[in-house]
Amino acid sequence: MLWLHDTFGNRWSDGHNLLAKTHRVIAPSLPGFDDSTTLDGIDGPEDVVFWLVDLLEALDLERPVVLGCGLGGWMAAELAVRYPERLGGLVLVDAYGLKLDGDLPADEFALTRPMLRPLVFREPDGVAAQAWLPDIDAPEQMELTLHARVAAARLCWQFPSSPKLRRRLSRARMPALVVWGQHDQLVPPSHGEAYVEALPQSRLAVLPDASHYPYVEDTTAFANEVSVFTRGLGATSP
Image (cartoon, rainbow, N blue to C red; front, side):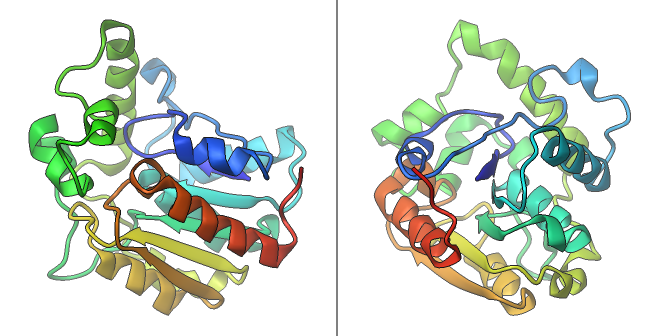
């Protein structure tokens, strides 16, 4: 399973831990997220897609399940429509990527952490929310956060979507699971419904106790949904 992270960078979560018990989970950092000085030539999703294809070849991954969260979900969808034969399955988690008139994502780059938390966590004052999105990062995390925000802004500043993606999703013919937190106010659940309507082999799992980060906020339900999906593919491994 290739896990693609969201706009805040590559951080291991309890959701990763649960899936890693039954899957080989590979979680790469997308271009520039560990060091924004390496962003030369990365201007949009297509550049990331080529980077991902090179990664699949370098790691000799044959038709893995690609799981993407937020921004990573958008990149996973862009990969799936261009190279459907390279994926064994697709999991989109509260993914960016689609432009729905009248139901646009909130602009996360215009919001402070205290303003953003109620949009992305069902319990914004809870332990998980405060740990994942503190008001101020710990000193050792600040540089990584800065690099991640620069890289994320390069890819999805104000317009985290591709106008052509929705009509191209019919090309992504692999089995797909779309997971959405019911309380997501950053990327509304209507985006999950739109993904399912456009993907040929897909189902929607809405988690009632989660918002934008179900793998942080409702890890057991999240991991169960993904595991049921991958068992159907014969994709789980010890």
